[in-house]
Image 1: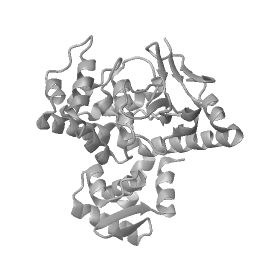
Image 2: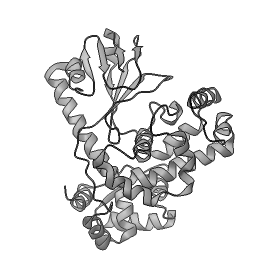
Image 3: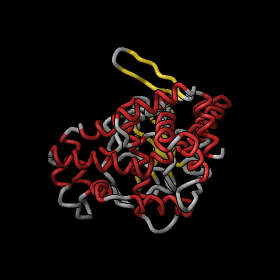
Image 4: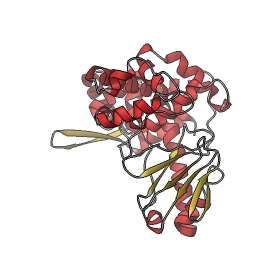
Length: 327
């Protein structure tokens, strides 16, 4: 089976690489990995750690993301920000037409969970339950490894930038081998589970490198906007079996557990006090106290625009966290 993207000259001018990781693609693809019992041995440690932390609240998500086959397109909307809370709000505001189409497609060849019918109908309570599942799963399975994810994507961006400087867009497409093969004007995915031709007809293509994507690249079945090609980054992704490192304990011992979690959340891009609170589970007052201490120590900076407050990690803080990871 192969998937073939047919690109016009206009598509080549509109091709771009996603500038940051897509939190919901990482959620979806990691959920696929979690449900498989074979393959990807370099993720065995991650599976062990993640399965030990899962709670019943994530079941609605796992019911919509079978290890193989179709998962609803609305779970991974195109063009969303890297902030998980904003991404989830985009999912929960999906038009009912899209919900119906995607849940109906999921039902082909399988019997989805009974509550999926309520999602199909746009029931507010069912959507809230799904939002809780997405947020809870992300906090347990993806967020603790955000530094690894971001480091791997930075390396991939640098690699593709070098290819572009050396030979332009066509050199970038050729550099996707072996997961994709570029023979102008067709980009072929030789290991895709479906045999399909996609004529972009000027809509463009977004290349989205993904940390949790394994083996075959993937795409949306029926996107509302530009097509996206999600493909695996080629990085070392081995995991300690326990999912913990001595360095992490060292950072917590130095700063205190709460401040260490706040610093890591800010480095991961959770720039507001509210976002840090959602990521860490700490109260807003506690986060505000910890950010004041971290700011006084020169590990973060804080800026205010009107009522909005944003935190950013400093180079010293970044080095401290990187040193914790042993990079």
